[in-house]
Structures are given as structure tokens and as C-alpha cells.
Amino acid sequence: MSKVRPQKVQELIKIETSQIISREIKDPRIGFVTVTEVTVTPDLREAKIFVSLMGSDKEIAASWAGLNSAKGFVRRELGRRIRLRYTPEIEFVRDTTLDYSEHIQHLLNDAHIEHDQEE
Picture 1 (cartoon, rainbow, N blue to C red):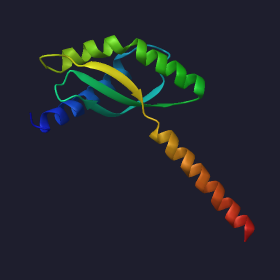
Picture 2: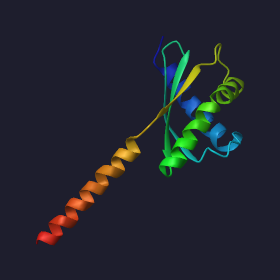
Picture 3: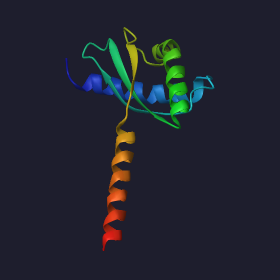
Picture 4: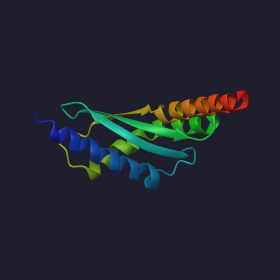
């Protein structure tokens, strides 16, 4: 199987999932959620949806619980919007790269401030 089809399906799932989360899910627990990446298996049976969550620790935990409880709804909506023989089983995965980059930026800023104070 070519690699182009899974890439197209990944991008389509990413776009549709973003729209479903932002417009369709009415769960008040779900706050600011960004779909950052989607990976699918070569047979298109399983999809991992990487999401970045913003907010306080309590808000992130609530958003995560809300997303996981809406997993069936998201899968059903994807099945309606994307015409595939099988709707992939979905799994939400937390993407912490933004948190990590924010942490690194904070460390760099602290090091820069300490360097300026030494001079």
C-alpha cells in the first residue's frame, strides 16, 4: 500500500477531529484543546490523535476526562464525515511538546537574567 493514502487520511482525521471538538462536543469540562497530530496504522484500523491541552492542572485534567468520555462520539462523527470501509478505533494521546518548550524557554530566560545580573 502506498504511503500517500494514510497521510491523506491522517490529515483529514486531524481536520475533522479539530472541528468536532471545537464545534460539536458540548461537554463543559473540555477547555482549550488543540489537535496537533494524527497517526494511523497502515491498515487504517487504528488512529492515535495527539492533543495539546492548555490551562491549569485542574482544567487540563477535566479536559482530558471530557475528551476520553467523548471518544465514542468523536469516532461516530468521524465515521459519518470520512467515508472509509472501517472507521478507525481512536485513542487520544497527550502531546506535551508545548509544555516542554515552555519549560525550556523559562530556563533560558532565567539563565539570561542570571547572566545579566553577574555582569
